[in-house]
Length: 423
Image (cartoon, rainbow, N blue to C red; front, side, top):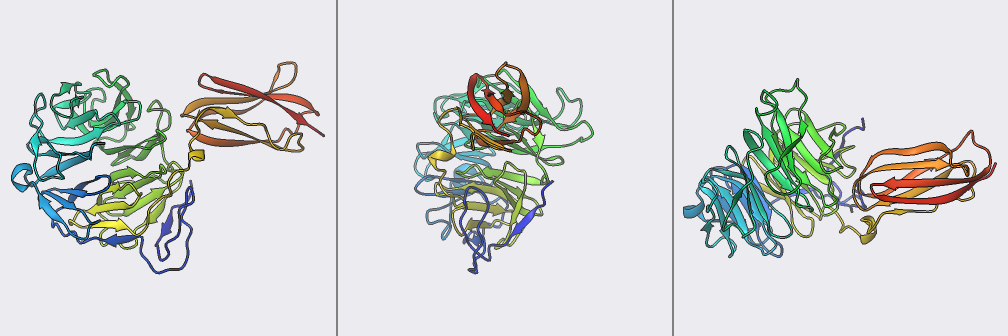
């Protein structure tokens, strides 16, 4: 287990595909905006090229057009005081889950339309909008609903379990719902259900261990590379890199997570109640505390704008903004455009060589070495691997000189190259 590091941005450096390069200037990571709502910030959504929206529990919905310098409460008569969820679609329309149902605004919150045709008026606690503007919502006790008409009409997608707390939709339109209680577990145990067709066919893909009862998964997040994160109140952060088929608890896993968000580089940020904000750039394998500048460590909401600036809201109604963008834009070379197996280097080699391969999407990978008789002499990889670039070093201590073949299988992709071992 890797240790958790602390970062106090007594320097502001630059993100280089992962960690923060520290220099010597005296700037905190977080800068407080002029928000002082007096009520817990439950959710934050940001509109491209204008508008930060913060929903509170008791103080209604607030908007800023100048990165938090000035805030205005909007929709007080229509939305009410209790805002549970926010989302913005590709057209810049804002959707709000309030106590009376779901509402939409096409003019930055000046006017609102109720969207309850086929949607119960129960509280909408999670909203997810995919790249085609399909909307999926979850209600606490009435199940999951989908709209392909910008919220004008809704289809019921069933009720995977008794309580639904959060949902997420990936780039393939697969829906993930976090639930708590009783249908399959027999007790109050957190679960995740998945629909592969975006309809009402649900399969249980994760449950907290049986010794963890009364657990809840409050938030889900999907990265641009397709990794899925879920925050179990008691079990910490769990992760899937194979579309939800298998899950692992991340090392040094944070607990009491109230919010999750990922930036444009796929880095994961976890807001905790009582411990501030943690950040990981390596799939949750190690974590960094980034609390300098926060006046409260009870963080309830995190979101990113189009330039990767981070916004965080706490339980006292304050909103903070990162002093610099949290990540560089991901270069095209960082996300493969296809599967590929590179020629090993060096070649010929002695005593070791490196084999590199790239995955367009997360896949189960085998990488094996064969002699010229077709006999397998080594297995270098036999596991699920995340999207992106990978490198494996091979040191064949007990093999004679000669020509060998290495072969990669990743899903339906297969490719081979020859390598030469010299003694």
